[in-house]
Figure 1: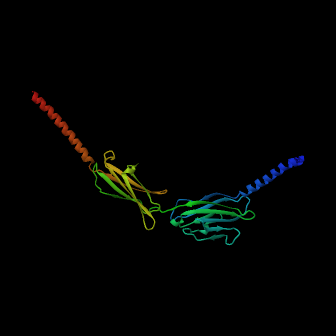
Figure 2: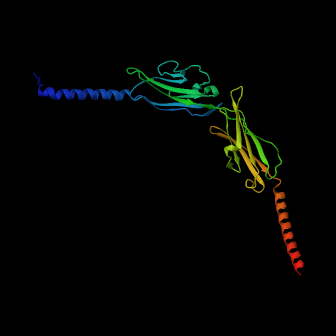
Figure 3: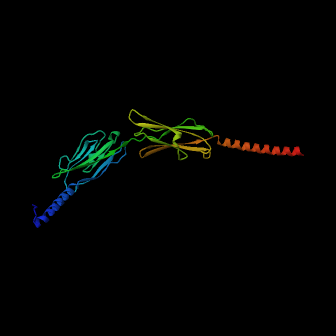
Length: 280
């Protein structure tokens, strides 16, 4: 036998379902209001510099319990407004916090070293009744740029047209290894013209050498000269060293060509003159 619901119950059940789902949806929206909008980690950073890690978060209608910062899952900074002291620092390798410049959403790191590199996490948690927690992570890379520009070493200093040029570009020590590029008359040299070598030093810094080899052909020379430069780049930091090579044989070669032309003309005129004398 089929049960027939009263007409009021027929409309009441869908209404109750709608009310329950609306309440659940409202509660769910309320719960997801806690969020981290942005974790700003200025990377790459230079060793010896200071940076500000900033964590932009939105609590919605919830109450903040704590903001924590981690490096490679090791906590180094805790901000709890209802505790004393409000800020607590925990030691981690390569992390030097300036408390006076830090707060409820940012941490000021000073005296960066290679050990400061790693994954940095901002974690935000709320108080009762929800006790929710969100976090996000970004990577910090600390670089050590070379203290000086690249050093160029020539195989010889005197050149003539047609000579082979061999120059070595040595970078200073850095981390990571510098990216070296050769330019000939402001044009990037083709990769087959140079050889590259990277050395890792005991202090874990690296240096790179790049040898450039090319021929002093006339089409390379500009007024008997050619300019070569080596550019060393570590991330966004670049240093340039350039030299100018003069082909001392350029003028002598031109003079020899003129002399040959003159001799050919004289020989031609003499032969014509001899033919005329012979005919007469």
